[in-house]
Length: 221
Image (cartoon, rainbow, N blue to C red; front, side):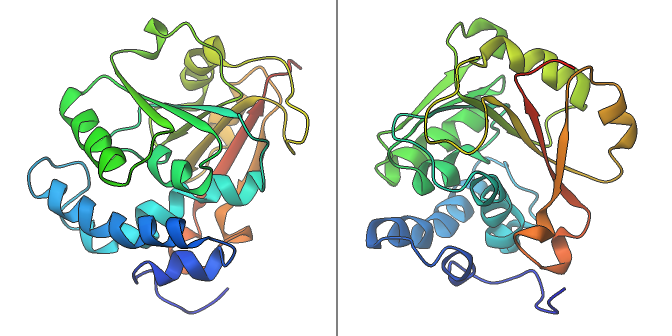
């Protein structure tokens, strides 16, 4: 485990994703200031944590990209309970060839997500105010970050997950969520196969020691 503290700016993103092109680097470089500006108007990140926007929110969101690796053009994502745009906005920058549909019940949070997507010229992002059950479309992956307990999250997400694997993608369609703490009881309650990956497998930083990526493929036990 590296001793580097979990702080820093966009250089932290470039360090773990050196393959980023100039447009992606510019977007990640601007993202922190955009969130700080909007957070002063509409609170979507704890005010105590806004100075850690890059490690705690942007890089954390990109753990999903670290797991998935390269994905096929046209791969579709739904961000269920996106809040101010995590993990959807960072992932949309990482995968400009993919589409991202961000859903949340809280309109003011979507205002922030939409404004930041527009400021970064992310034409691969759409937003929906309301419940995910109101969306009838199917997606390759539903992603989420600290939204709810795993079992109800699986029920909510799987209404919108396709069952056809897209050629070239490392993982079958499914739910990929970011969670923390001891997940044994949550995983035991889910009647589907569940895979768990420590975030530190991809980002060996102390602040991610208790963080997990949970993947639930569209396959029943």
